[in-house]
Length: 500
Image (cartoon, rainbow, N blue to C red; front, side):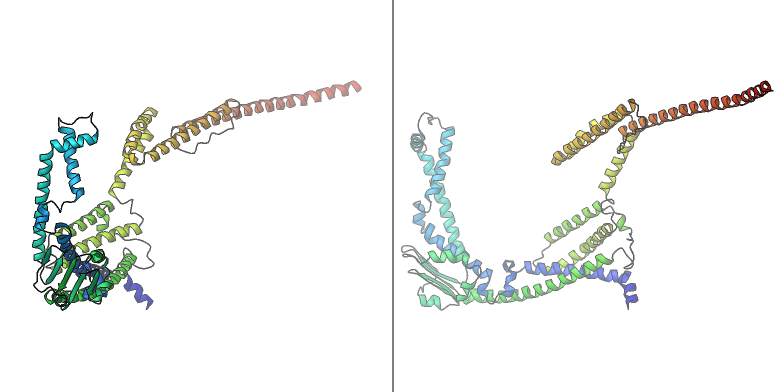
């Protein structure tokens, strides 16, 4: 069983099947996310909601309706109120006057810098009275335009009944304004005499209820009255749509979870087996695609992502959601091939080395090194003088690091120079056995080696001289011994003759 597993685990068939699984699961994840995005208000939480009245869609529409109705009675009130300038707040009028005052201050000859600001402001109101009046008229016209747009927008609300009053002005779209009539509908809101009645009570459990809570707290105070009812024509289609979206959301979540799990498992397994032929195989086997430089590969991956978004943007995905599949599959296939190539280089430890930028920089560095090593000292100094400012300019965003590295290198070279200087001093004082040690390469290393070669020559010369002196002494000793031996024999013979 283990042998069969080893045979099939890294086979080309297994890799192709796993590759197809990754593409299928990835496309499934994208499709599920798209289905969720196309839901009403992108509300994925509706999959866990029990009622339409808990949805963000219901609360969003209710919030918009309440805001529009409150704006009618609290800001605009009536057309007469707007024409009298009542809808323009004091802050809005003050800001308009200040803009005109700055114009008066900068451009009017009537402005007197010797007067106080209050006196100039009074003068401004007299001189610019006509401009202030025209500015106010312009604001009133804009308010009136917005008022009629608001009335038209409220008129377009279908299936909603309302009756609102501030005690003077009344707006309604039904002749029957009794509470009982409004309460006869599937959903309603009654605000009157500081009393609030909202139906159904499930609305209070809506997680977005805070959107309308502040407006509800202010409604129905003093003489203000607000009745709102949502008819069956409004509620029923939205409930049916909510139920349909709820099913789609739940199914999309289940599919998303399944496809995501399959994507993770299949992709991790593909990463594990890609580039190798067995579990014992330590070599990463590369193919034609892997010859592509990694940085170009990465750029192509980004290009594929941009192409996918461009195609998606140019297609009516909302009406043709299945078009996402023919768009995603070919791009995902090409992208996965490129990603797997990057993974193989990462496993092969050539992720950085097999890049166009690295090759270019490495070639430049090697060229500079060859020129530096083969050139004269003057050429090296010129290269350093020209190259360092260029390096600082390129790495301006980390210039403290560049300056620190240059200072460290200069300090290192100074230490090498001092070591040579001290070594020469020691040798000059007679210690020809001393050797100057320089660890780095470069001109100082060459100089130290040359000085050490000189000391080696001196040592050899001294040794040769000592050897010559020693040979001379031995020669004299031997000659003396050779001469001494016959003389001693003659002397002894003469002494013997004397005795006889």
